[in-house]
Image (tube, rainbow over all chains, first blue to last red; front, side, top):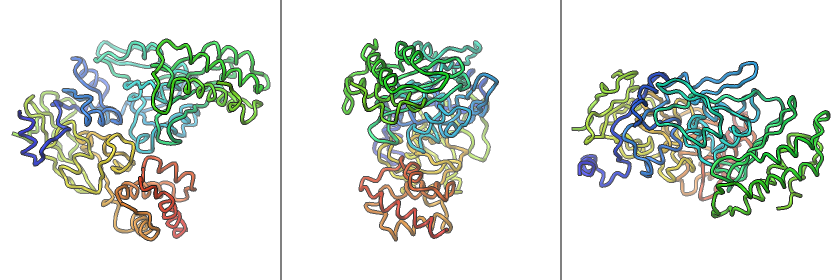
Length: 309
Length: 187
């Protein structure tokens, strides 16, 4: 077999990295990317934090890689009067500390490690769609939309639809759009350690003081982030919007409703080491109560600890 | 035959410049090896028989003999293969080597023999911040990067900045002490 022969020529007995990847393309523009994807056999490479280890482990073995690193038009971010738009090539590092979106900044800051944040991208997070992905959870809470290009043109879908149907192999995520913040936003997660850890469970909370709404998304419970709608409605009614405060019992009740919602998701993630489904349901309720307490004063610092499992 | 520079079958946006900024594509399914150049520590190094799917970590060690870049988790979690790519701290195991063509890669050897890198190395020695030494090159790269960007970082910021570098000897206390001493010496 030629792979083995080539390995020996290279002075290496076995090269587990040798896959069937025979082509790589490094386009400069979105138009070139979508042209290259038109045949449907190109594997997109964004930051590489998911794909490159998977290539090494041979979990993925694409014939053709389309690398996005040099597509500068994917790296911009900006704001209009009502919306934020973030190019798919924007890294977590670029989002950390972005004052226009404190929620995105808070989410990006707790993704992986500095090394991961310097390479991982918004588009990569969407393309991989890890059910524990930090960014997916926040974008679900923020009512974000995904902008997708192909040779057929441009389409825009909301995050739940995107996660339900996925990306056609001829398509490229070029950006996400989300409403500009109208109130406090937080993203909280629990992992095996404080930093550089995948979220076991997570909770994103987006408070809209103008329209008097609370959006909540929880991650690590189901195959994709879940919106606990009954809990959102409960807390919306319980907040003193004029004062911008929440009572401790309302925050605790919100956490309980979130935990209840986590118990009835249609596609729960299975038990795993360090995080049984029961523990994760409890923990996400704690996170939700803590999140709303951080967004709105009045609940006291430790309200989350009082939430019953 | 290996080392073919082709690229004409999918050539939009490619070319064969001398800066290594070009990814050659191979024409034959039976020969997925390619040639390109990488800028490593200021030197343009030819890579003549790598596989397209190889990581920067793999090519640095197996093709170019850069053994300071350590191979441990291969999942971007441990930081032992930390290098700078165009000045940004990255894990070499998460970078596709062929996609690093055109970028400036800096390993611990390329941080310089003077200045902050020298001070960091000296402080690691003086404070016993090296036990088995496996994680040390990655830590020195990460610490030098941190002190260049945030010379006055407090301990919380230092710990956050080093969260992606794991020392399984658990020698973090000595590492933090070494960093503090560099900061103190520089005032």
